[in-house]
Length: 399
Image 1 (cartoon, rainbow, N blue to C red):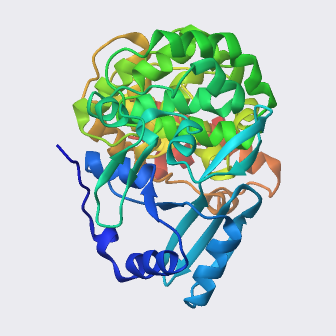
Image 2 (tube, one colour; image 1 turned 180 degrees about the vertical axis):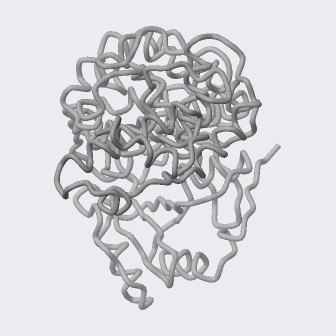
């Protein structure tokens, strides 16, 4: 039976305008890759990729003749971007690799759709669709693999990886998002034997892939296989042994919260040095701060006082995440009663300020900061019960 795809993007005026311009310029345009794959499995479409059987110069001329703005995003590899309003369309000429080095490829253009499909990474990414949405399975196995949630390399796994070592990480990411059950043994063996090639990739690319993987609903099988094959240790030596990702997934599910890649990363690295991890993955400052907030504390979060304490120290979201991670690491069921207590703790506001100490007769200087720290510790240890007057009354002890 012929498969078809549907979607607002397919029939949008902007899409039809680009398709018409390419067709008028002599090309046979077909949608390809992620937009076809995701439309078939009912996921939101973010990027619209189009393949054409003409060379990039012809593509540019066809678009410009129709008054469409063109950006030569990857012209040397046959890719340009057409821009209409707020929609972007990445258009790539059919091509085949003639030389690869594990990071980049030299290509030549072709009119053979099968040759273009054969150079792609996974069978589920080699699906094409005509402008009316009719799906074309050039390889004859892409649709069945997608339906079976089987992430499989096109041809020999080792050959595909040697063309671009990032495909090692893409295999695990795609399994996390689209796969189900065990991963293909041949692919895992190839990843294990070729994992050293990851050292030649930029840390930005590695970090981006890891965060995308960890954002998947259920990445546990993928991260477990990354650990078993040694891939995880190559890109992140700080990772702890046998990370309990499945347990963390279960804890997240129990309280109904969405996946968060930084929460999952914090569980993977446990108490490793945050700055070192940030450098290894080229994390943004915001991600680095969020990761630091989720580092396990020195105390167990197992009662009302400790729950309120972590909420106050880290905030409600990070405090909750720390609790989830701790439950996963210890193998104990998450105590859902602690979650509202963490939120309660996050709303506490230190009742004593620097001005209070100055009014009480302390001299300005570093002693003010030290006294505030000690008073805050006293307040926290009282489970936030000591009032301002009592805390100010302890200034002599704190100083």
